Amino acid sequence: MSEGRDVERGRKLLIPPFLSPQQEKKEQKRGERRARVRSAEEVEEGVVKLPPDIYEALDKPAEVEVVAPGGSSHEKKKAFRVVPDERVPGGEVHVSAEDLRALGVAENTVVTVRRK
Image 1 (tube, rainbow, N blue to C red):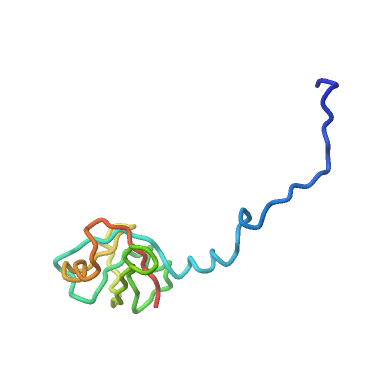
Image 2 (spheres, one colour):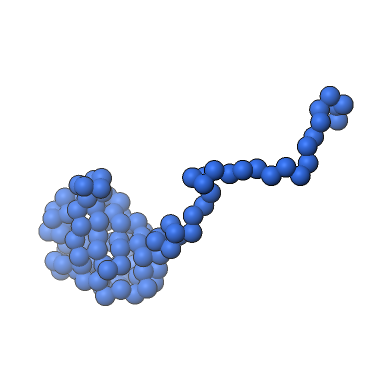
């Protein structure tokens, strides 16, 4: 090592609060998951088919709320009855074409699925 550099040991770094992880956000995330929405003909209106991984992560809800993007004042929400389905790929949710139009989103849009 060069003699011109002094290394200080034992100093602690101060991390600003906005950079430190917050426990509150992790608790909130348990009740919601993001997934891609797809329309399926075999799904009834007012029903959402969830894959087993999302169904388990939301603690097996009877009803969920699907929130479409668009900013805080423009987001569209709709409540759905839940049907777990093993044939639905992970990371996707299936709704009817009418419900997709009611949410005002296209296929493959990322939506938030929240437990009610």
